[in-house]
Length: 465
Image 1 (cartoon, rainbow, N blue to C red):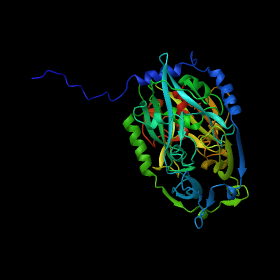
Image 2 (image 1 turned 90 degrees about the vertical axis):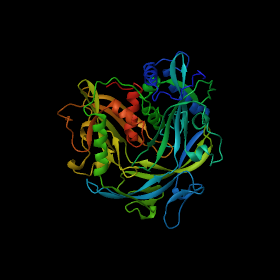
Image 3 (image 1 turned 180 degrees about the horizontal axis):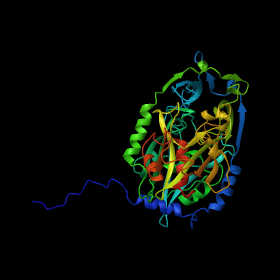
Image 4 (image 1 turned 30 degrees about the horizontal axis):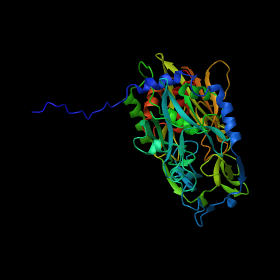
């Protein structure tokens, strides 16, 4: 009888060393062999000078390759790819605005947002890109290694290949460290999802001029600045499987999931796609499609020239918000453990009715005409600037610059107490630890994109709670 040992086919279910490696990278803010944090701003400015960038507003009727469909009025591309602007009818049954109609971006294809990681001197570094997006106020921001829709990486536009894409779509080019399908803005996108990936490589990676290696701690320092780290990078970082020393939580993981399931079950939401031509209360003029009262957003057009992109020139519609948004987490230390007050928020574009959002998420100007009792809870608290140290973090970040024009949100962490935010919160709100929220990002459609931006600030060390 042979005594040869049969190799085991089993692997550990979890890479236990990964959270510690990520935490080590978050603690390193000075890389000895890569770019210094203080040099990133000059590097970004240099990459902006190295390429030709130009964005001009264009009437929707004059967008090259785009047209309004006869009958429905939907705005789409002649290829049938990329995305379209359609109508949406939403009925939530309660609240100050129980039903409405609006334009919304429909982009059924799933894109890839991927960050490539590699160790240098025992510390994980992340390959970040200086990427131009036409909707960014400052055009160029720090983005993931790969940020591409399926139409882009399948080269529907007949442009050049997406750099470093093989690390994320070809097996064997790297080890997948995290991979989850996450939603985008539920008020502006209809059921849009992107694949958020972190992939590690041991291979030598030639670094293009528009890319650089940074530690997680360096990215955290840059997240303290306005409009430097783009939304797609932030959402990927929020999905990093971090390890946080937490002695416990106000509610167990099972209790949290039960509460969240009950929130999804209790909301009777009816969402229907309708022709854009049937969206009442919105009017087209020479500048685009918007509301006469100037609220919410407009749909406008741009013509783009970008020397560093796969295609150097194109035209497209963009959604332009009317006002700067606010997204804020109230936090408290409960038993010495930081807890965040999450809101189970309904948005018309979500795949499954409700996702966990920051305590406050809105554009204040949209609520000025409403009586005080209809305004979002805690809005006055996070809008104020008390100057007493309660604001632990504050920065303005751009949202998706490939679909939104000058879309900016003021992100905050604000310390609360029993008087301002009791342990037994009102309906629709719950206290969760940072670790609990982070664990949910391993799964899709639990944590919304605004909450993920704030979570990325914790994961990277940009904020200490």
